[in-house]
Length: 369
Length: 247
Ligand SMILES: Nc1ncnc2c1ncn2[C@@H]1O[C@H](COP(=O)(O)OP(=O)(O)OP(=O)(O)O)[C@@H](O)[C@H]1O
Ligand SMILES: [Mg+2]
Image (cartoon, rainbow over the protein chains, first blue to last red):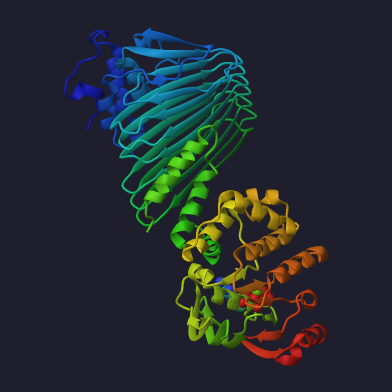
């Protein structure tokens, strides 16, 4: 079956401002039917996501912008999008730029003391956050839990020496697709604290590029996927300059009947000596019948680099369980305590307390039998 | 009424018979030392008492306060007053010591239909106990036994003993790997625990511990059975002669 973008299947028309026969339509259709694209969407259905891309979207709600952050709205997004279209690697996200009438850009200058809070509801317009040289920001992203269908695309650019701590707590239950693209510039540092639960369909695409020497990127992610829920994380960490670092740790728990997919690729380009990249993905399978697919990949074109990656799928440790029960802690309480501990090592940053409370309540609501 | 009656138990681990008809009778207020060669089954006995999965009783019975406990899961044995200080306490990263101790104490309270101890009072008590055992209270914030030295792990076991106040404490080589000062601290902790209503089983290789915690009985376990029982003179004799003369 050939995929078609968005509503074309039912109502084949491009956005009003696109001329008929626009080369981009062809490009998009090609990209959505490419081999790589099919590979990337092996474990999640893409059509529900494509259906959402062209639906009307609104700007996400954010806290009053503190001094140092200004908002610019660009119309005709695809021509003006600060990070540009990327049909090859991110056709869906690029299609968002193509279909939506505008993109919101937040420009950040200086050291912003108070956190910037973003709350998504349903479909958010594409958002770009650009940190100017030496700017620093604490970005906290959450979403309303009750919307059935949610789409967000977020582009982030860190100029020389900029620092961003980015936390996201994502616990909605419906269908959700989220794309994040980050360019980390010279001596800039980016940290992502990602906390999520499963949903009917949750797909998180993250593409981080360390583009200049001294760039540093970190991801710490904790996910709890309950029975009959789905989580698909597709992560690309690209090093395209020498002397760049990345550290990635992903922990996920799949309860009985959950489907968890992790695909993490480290891509080190040519002439990127002195790069240091690690990726660890650990999965805990509770109960029976969780389906966990994990595929860490390395693509390395420079000799002089340090790179380590690993993935595990395991169960709770019997010795840990016995130690707990010998102290009077009943088995189901012990299992919760130990599972929480497994996630807790990856719950960090300013939204950690909220994430912890949410995941704890989800634990309590589950039965792991 | 006996506190513990171990009646002719046979037990297997991984398909191998390790305990071969072991008897032990413990009254409140007593201290029993169990000595014996490596691999004779001392830890197996301790694990059988605590209910460790994989350790199977094939014959005989274990009664705590006149109730057979062999079918009980480990946490119910703990609620009934049994405590095992592990020969090799495990590390559990991510679960803080404090959280673990509180969960244990809460589980005991819940089983007894008692009110939970408030968090502040609990933290204070745990810190005081840690200090009394020469353990830096800051350790309570770390993961359970995480990065603890051998001696610190053993002191942490005694901390749990003092916190949970069981009726029967089974201490599996709690003295191994302790320096001389730590040995005294641990012995003092055990003696602090002791009263007329509870009892202690000390598994040890060293007579030295028995200078500090004076046993009422010393048993020698060899090849899955108690082959000799006596008072603390027996421990001195073992120290001098080894085990060969017994078997
Ligand atoms: N989980 C296990 N799997 C296989 N064999 C075991 C297991 N636990 C104990 N054993 C075996 O049972 C026998 C008794 O072991 P146990 O640990 O009870 O000895 P011990 O008297 O405590 O020795 P030590 O003085 O060295 O601590 C040994 O041969 C040991 O290898
Ligand atoms: Mg032993």
